[in-house]
Image (cartoon, rainbow, N blue to C red; front, top):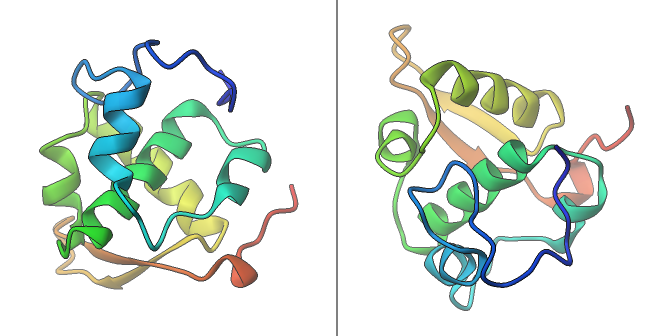
Length: 119
């Protein structure tokens, strides 16, 4: 399933604990500084876009983008989260900056100019 930028405002958002689209965007992007609209136009799945938005929300709130913090609001499996994180890393949208080897990873968002958006 691909993210639809024109999704209805009341539509439920997968992987975000029952929030609808408006609540989800407000929760993760109230006057955000880090989110870039390009994320909606590069053919990523809803799950990957959702993870990106969650990461932006954490960053904008002054939180740490860590697997632990993401799991507190992620509403799918840990395996799905790993797959989405891997894709964001491969696309150079997210960079793992710290890892203890036991999946207690910390990430940072990468500037949009450095994203790898080709297939």
